[in-house]
Amino acid sequence: MSSVPTMSTAVPIERAPLSLRRTLRAYLMEVRFDTLGALRTPAFAIPFIALPLLIYVLFGVVINRNAGSVSEFGPAIANYLFTGFAVLAVAMPGIFSGVILAQEREGNLLRLKRAQPLPPGATIVAKLLMAMAIAAVAVTLVVIAALAGGLLTISLTQVAVIWAVLIVGSVPFCAIGLMIGAISSASAAPAWGNLLFLPMMWLSGLFIPLPAFLEAWVVIWPSFHLSQLALGLAGVEQFRFIPTTFAAGVLLGVTVLCGGLAIRRLARHG
Image 1 (cartoon, rainbow, N blue to C red):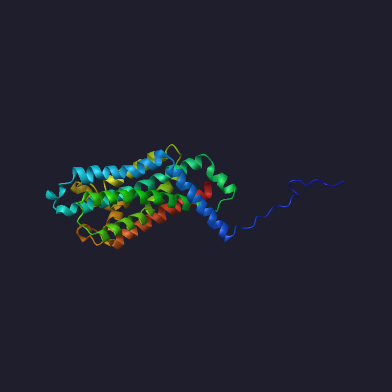
Image 2 (cartoon, one colour):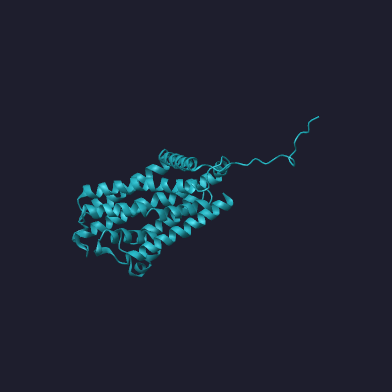
C-alpha cells in the first residue's frame, strides 16, 4: 500500500530563476499595462495632461501677456513663467502616481503580482516610467503652447534643453509619489499629495512674487531646484539664482531618500 505524502514529507518545489529575456519582458509588460491603465483612467490622465496646459495658457499667456512691461526682468519674464508652469506639468503626474500605488497596495494587487511571480523591481520601474510618460506628454503640450504664444525670448535650442531636463527631472517627484503611495492608505494618498504639492508649487516662487520673508525659503522645495536646473543647463543666466550643481544635488538627494524609503517599505510590507 503506497503512502500518501504529507505536509512534512512533501518535497519543496524549486523554481528556476527567470532568464534575462523573460525578466525584461516582465518589466516591459508591467510598464505597458501601468501606462495604459493610467491613460484609460480619466481621473488621472485628463487632469494631469490637460490642466497644466490650461493653467499656463490662462495665466502664462493670456493674463500675463503684458507682464514684460511692468516686470523688472522685462519681456524675459515670460521665460521664467514658462519654466515654472512646465515644472508644474512634470511634478503633478509624479507626485500623484502614489495614489495608484496606494490603491494597488490596499487591494492586495501587489501581493497577487508577487505570487505570479513578478520581478521585485517591476512595480517601482513601471510606476516611474508611467509617470514620466504622462509628464512628457503634459510638458510637451506646454512647450507647444509657449511657442505658439510667441512670448518667449530664448532660442528653440534652449527650449529643447528645458523640455528634456524637465522630463528627466520628473524622477524626484515620482520618488515622492512612490513614498506617499507606499506609506499611506488609498483614501489618504490624494490628501497627502495635495498637502505637499500645493505649497510646493505656490511657495517655490515659480509663478507669483513672494513676500520678502518667504523668498529665502524657496530652497526647501524640489520644484524650485528643478526650475533652476533647467534654466541653468539651458544657459538662461538671468534667472539662475543658485548654482546648477547644487540644484542637481538636491534633486538627487530627494530621489535617493524618497525612493529608498518607498522601496524599503514595499519590500517589507508590500
